[in-house]
Length: 227
Image 1 (cartoon, rainbow, N blue to C red):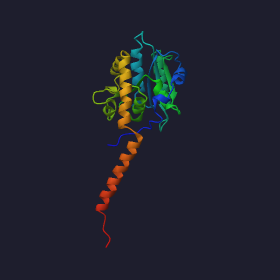
Image 2: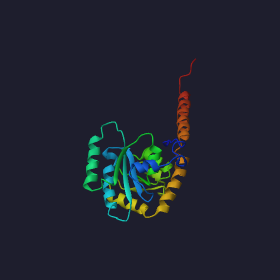
Image 3: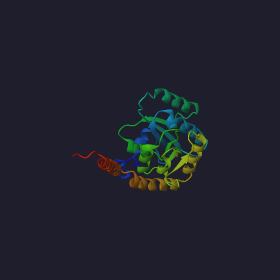
Image 4: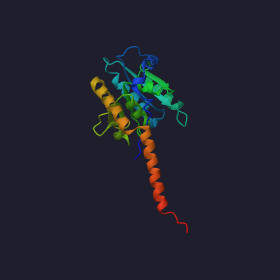
């Protein structure tokens, strides 16, 4: 298995100030907790499940929350699904609590601007998004799909797993993290160490090279010998 790889010189919390991106989301104080998702705006990623969970969290009036849905351009148009998501936010009367945006060149700032990263889809492998969030010391809440356990750790020490497309389970897991700031901080800190050790870009390159090198050497043993 060759893991995905990140450029940690870019995804470095010590080089990143998220104040500007948070202000662009309408957040002026540090007490507001931002729960966000980054990914293609398609049903498989589960942004609709995220909004349903957000509506449940809004019942806790003592919590100061903001929800950010940041989209990446998919291979097909996402306008129809985006319209559905906006309608869902309106249905739950959360227009002032939900921010929609798109990925530009400031992805590290976006991830640092979050306090919790979520991806509750049914089919989408968490992939780079979750790793980028951990690299910026942010805990993750992911669907229990292929590859998710490798990201959150065997004991879920870097994040939590939820049942795919289960808004209530997602709501409960997020609420657990909201109740324990120290736990969120610890998960994020350990999560960065985890991805540094296992998901470095240079390590990915070297392991890929080693696989090709091994295959070429094996192939050469069976090549016809010239007389």
